[in-house]
Length: 345
Image (cartoon, rainbow, N blue to C red; front, side, top):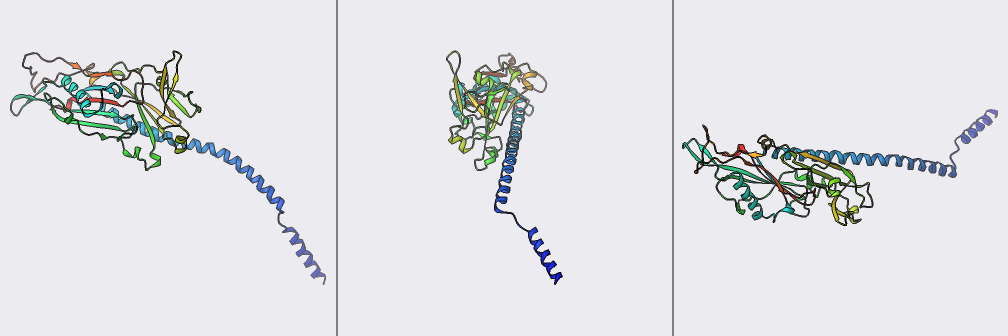
């Protein structure tokens, strides 16, 4: 009987030890965990922001590096390089481009001859000419940020170039950069002539820390390019704005303005952080080697061929950027007209 009583006491004691939490205790514990969770999220959110910024920076750097490599590979060994910006051109139709291309042909290739060993005589030279466009204008058939190339192939040196000789544009950058169906591909790419690598807070906007502007563009100061030794292209890349940002009035490729001390309205382009700003310096090796001139190209395998009047054509200027805007401008397309000496046949 006594053993039975002891067993009951042990069971009762065990039940008392297994007693659960009261409702109030559970509420207090949940409140404490909620406070701790808020604190953890406050710590994690900046880390996520940093991660997203680092990811965007890495991708924009890769894109700008690809563009840098492409521009150098195309222009580094050009023998002639004429640069235009669309705001300084009469137009950008095939006829307008043909007029510039014809001037280029007449300047560098008119009356050029080479030696045809198969007939032991001089013959009209043929050349290739390229028109490259850096696209800054949004809304066209070619997306903003794309680079296009037109090739006028095997054109006779004495034959005028007309609008029918201007071929269609061919996109050069990976189209995945501009695919609207891939959200991670939505980046804005902009180009400007000149070496201007300093970014300043865009004080003209409410959120000056999220948007920045190029110093030279913001100040409306002249680009640093003065000769063929200074050819540089500034490439700016930013993540495209989200739909909520656009609906809030922060337009993609937004142009902003302010009134300077002299009462002049200065327009400039602002970029959203994080953004990549790189300066592609293009060493025009052939043009630099010839001190800014192109070879006359009156030659054969054994000596110089004279033109009909007996006067050999002198070396001619190969670089021209007089038809470009004087200050950095991310809104005008940039055109390069160029050719290679080793493609003359």
